[in-house]
Image (cartoon, rainbow, N blue to C red; front, side, top):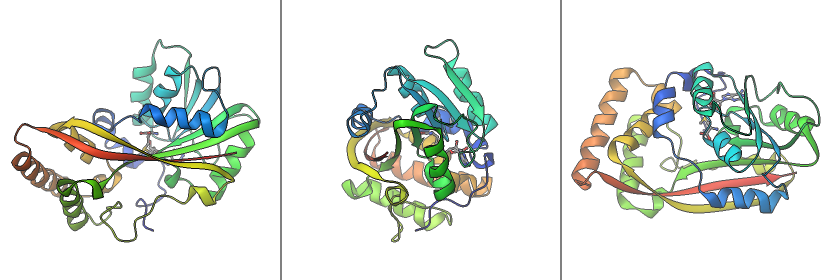
Length: 256
Ligand SMILES: C[S@@+](CC[C@H](N)C(=O)[O-])C[C@H]1O[C@@H](n2cnc3c(N)ncnc32)[C@H](O)[C@@H]1O
């Protein structure tokens, strides 16, 4: 499995923080219901440590469901977007610049440790040892990834194929060895779910999502622009009204 270009802290996403903030999707409601059901942890009143919180997509959703969240990320630019959007909300979000392999959080202080689209950036053993350290008895780990479901639409399969063709660091459904990150093997998993959903999105926002990926940040600006232009032209030809209905699925693994 080839998942992500390396373990460099912070920098990769900081370069695409605005595109990330504007382009990436949230997780469907069913994700949070499944976390509750599989973990036994009620989000309302829970303390969650959201590791690799980025611009706060998962952080905000946890807070909206009543959790106090400690958001940890090494990326200063990503955390700046998270903080800008969290100001004034309740419960309070505490944003900490830090490393998921050495969490800046006290032992036994959390009910949930979450990884939204982030665990594959961490050391598999050190990160889970840290999660165990900061969890209270009865606490749980929840990791999820929001993935395009390329097999569900020909236009999306073609889009993925263009990515695989032009982006050396691309990882995803269009590469043969692709698989979800092996988190279920890293802890005692109590449940896994695949949650299908559909993302209705304008082409330009979809192209911002494209720009927000680490494999795009690894291209030269000229190559990234050329690829975005190629994808734009194909998508506009196929969807002249400018709106896409993107088949998605969330993979969720919960462990204790
Ligand atoms: C794909 S983003 C996910 C952001 C957010 N959780 C979401 O659901 O969209 C991955 C995040 O992991 C962060 N990251 C990379 N290495 C990390 C590490 N060692 N510890 C914690 N977070 C890390 C990156 O800075 C980035 O913000």
